[in-house]
Length: 157
Image (cartoon, rainbow, N blue to C red; front, side, top):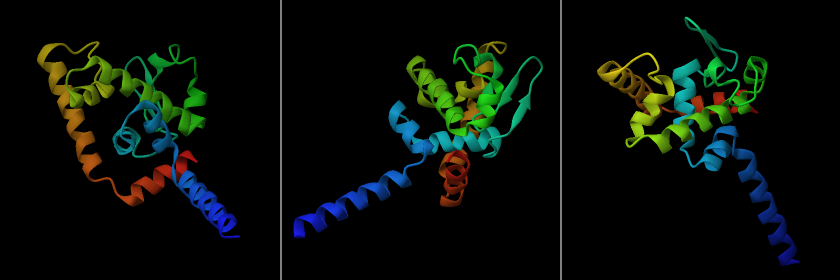
């Protein structure tokens, strides 16, 4: 009887832990990233709005992670999918960030490259743009609150 109760208790605890893990936690774990870093990028990029659309001179950015339309072909996706599936949007953003980490010698340069790919900016202008963006993300990261985590949990579930 005690074993049965113990097994029931352990399965209940396991279920609670799994339910507490949200999209950001799962994707971060799969990609070897920090979940709060992904959340901070989502807040900097879209203020946590999964329907956000940013318009640039020759492209658009979609959803929580503001995935640029230039990525659509590589990820075999669409504007509609990125706007209607917030967790998929986070997955694509995490893939881009993880790729940046493999290419960069400095972690915060990889974060800066998430927003400033430097296809047009060169030299010091590129460095400055990446540093400016990385500082925004850093400030969002250190200011991550449970309320912000909950907002993102709500929009990705």
